[in-house]
Structure formats: C-alpha cells, structure tokens
Image (cartoon, rainbow, N blue to C red; front, side, top):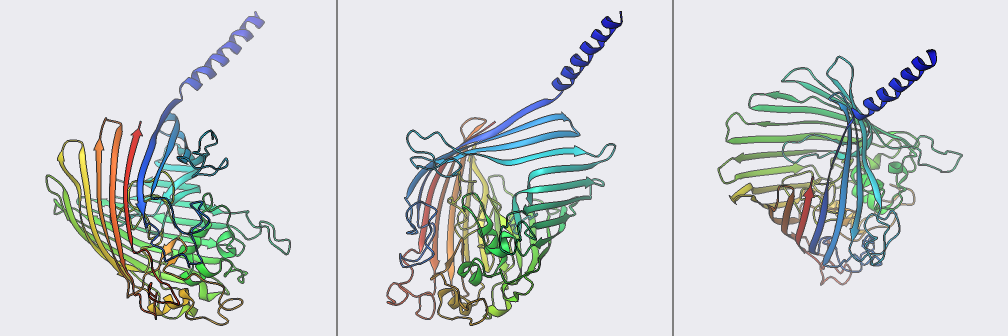
Length: 525
C-alpha cells in the first residue's frame, strides 16, 4: 500500500510539474527586413587625399562605396510569459547580410556571397521582467533597451541596448518614476603594471519622473556616469568597429580635435572621469489640434588630470504642429552649443554617450531618424550619431500625410548650420597646433570636416536636407517603405578654412551632395 501511495504521489508531482510548465505562455514575434538602396555621397567626404579614410566598406580605405546595395536582416523575439507579473524576453538578430559580400562568421555586414552560410546571429536583448509581490514596482534585469526621453528630437543623450537593471513605479495616473543602472563596459583592460581588468568599468545611473496631466506631459530626468581610467573610453582601445561601438562613444564624450587625432589622448589620467546630464522635456496638447513640445538638456564630462578633454554644453529643441484631416504640418527648430576658439579648455559641445537606431522624427538622412536600416552604416545619420551637437537648425514637415487608404507620406525640409568656432576647425585641419596640450603635442590629424564618424560644421558652414518618405501597407503585416533624400553642404572653402578643389595645398571638398533612394520591405508578425 505504501508503495502504491508513493507511486501515486510521484506521478502527481510529475504531472503537476508538467502542468506548471504548460502554464507558461510562449509568444513569438519579429520581422524580416529586405533593403534595396541607391546611395551616393553619403559620407560627404573630401577627396582621396584625406587620411581618415572610411575602411568599413571593404574598399581599401578610399572612403567610397558602391552606389547600389541590397541586404537583409531577420529579428526574432521570444517571450516566455508566466503571468502579468513575470515574463522573460530574448531578442535575436540574424544578419545583417549584404548580397554578394564575403566575410567570416560573426561579421555583421558580410556573409552574403554565393555559397556562404555563416550569417551571424546576435543577441540584442535578453531580460527578465517581474513585479515585487503585492506592489506596483516593476523590475527589469538583463540586456535591455534604455533611452533618455524627448518629445521633439527623441533621445539626445543615450539610446542603446545595455546590460543593467531598471525599475519603474506608477504612483497614480499622473506621476511615475523610472530608474536604471547600466554597465556598458567592464573587464576589458589588459594593460601594463599588472593592471588586468582594474578600474576599467563604466557605470551609469539614470532617473526619470514622467508626469502626465490632461493636455500636458512633462518628464524631468537626470543621468550620471563614472568612467574608469582604464576603460575603453579613456584608454581609447577598441575592437572590430562593426561589433564594438567604443569609438562612437568616445567621439561623443571628448572634444573633436582629440577624439579624431589620438585615440589614446586620455591615457594620462589615473582617475575616474565623471559625466552627468540633466534634462526637461514635455508637450502641451490642451489647445488640440495644436501641439507644442520642447526638449532641453545640459551635460558635461570631466576627465581628471586631462582637462583639455573635458566637454560640456546644452541642446534645445522646440516644435509646433497642427493636426488636419489629411496630415499634420509642423515647424521646429533646435540649437546646440558649439566649441569656442580655445582647445585647451576642452569642448563646449554637449557630450553624447551613445545613440543607435532611429531616434528623431525630424530627419531621415542627415540625422538618425529614418527607418532602421538593415545594418549600419545605413542611409540615415550621415551627420553622425552626435552630429546634432554643435549645430543649429530650422525645419518644416508634414507627417502622417495620407490621401489614400494604407498609404502615408512624410515630407521634411531642414536648413541648418554649425555653432563651432572656425578657429577650432583649423586645429582639426592641422593648420593650428597645441604644443604641450597632449603627450607629444599634436598627435596626427584628419584633414577635413568629417571627423571620424561625426561631421564638424563651423559658424561659416551650412547645409540643407530634403526628405520624402512613403509607406504603403501591402498586407496587414507587410509594409513597403520608400525613402528619398537629398542633402547639400555649403562649406567655407577659403584657404584659411576647409579649402577648395582649387587650393593646391588642401585639395578641398570633392563631394558636397548626398542622395539616397531606399526601398524596404518589412514583414512583422
């Protein structure tokens, strides 16, 4: 009898555990992206004499690329939902693969040649969501998307997947609180003095307070970061740029002169650097169909022992739009502080930690804001991830314009210029030097306005951008997107500045126009 009871209890436990496992609800979603594009002049570089040639296209560093490219990517998101209080999410990226390109396993833009089967599978997000029992406190742990808020521009400080922990709590219908800790870098240093993985961490803490009222929303926020002296950002080391974005982060956290001229310019510091940002963003809709919105943020980063690497500044953006039956016309403007004429006191541009993927609705070519491309570098964000820093601009747009079912258009026209001192640009050109400001004085250089992954416009430089973007819903889950764009630069091409093609010593700008025509098919489920 005891054996029978024991057997029944064991069977019950097995069946009970099986039933519990079956209670998990698995949800699968994702998308297929097929991209076919014509691009020309997207880097807006100077001629072949430039020394900072773009080598990311597998062309030997000439700074040029094919005008037509085709590629694809598959995103797969798996959710394991136990209840409304507990779930886990993992997001895989398969590809990107550009048609015809050879490569090795793990290369995110190759492996599209005949016979290759080694497309990389990357882990984008992997996090656990749960609520503290009997409370409204939600915790998210793991690799997760984190972004600073913005009602006009979008994220202007940080927007990327990062490893960390975030928490959110809703007090009532009007007030919430969100906080996070993220660790972008740690245990990557293997330098001298037996300093292996020592003082090489980068830790970030953020706090946001979304406030929502009838016809009015506002979100004050703040973020602070500690940057170790042996971290990739301070030491300047990086691995494959297609898989490691340290160089992009460094461009946004140091002055343009040092970020481009010497990747190890900050190595003299033996202390932690400190960065912080404070912002206020909101919108007013009480006068519907009018909508008014603004973004305001200030930030700075201080490098101990190397003050010439400090960077601080602000960014402001405003928007006014009116909703009509056929579309939403609007007008907007922005202003970001620029460098003065003294490189010894660092940079007066607002530091930007990292911005990845589309984040602004004001541009789909010059700045990141178009359809998320199959792989970077894509057809938007050609000013660079921090390209808005050190610029001002005004623009008009009509969004959600539709005259036929399932067909929508966005039209934008932007005119912008630089807020950086022309004198500072001469240090980038190498026409002026700073003896003793960094180890060894001037440490190499780059001969034009395309400083690494960001463009550097002065108070004498201007640009114009035109976007015409269209989306058509072929089926409920299949969308076709056509993005057309044109951009023109008016640079100061005098001998005292960037130079021109007639200048025998500088050999100036050879590409001042950029055009794109990108067709994307996106299947989402």
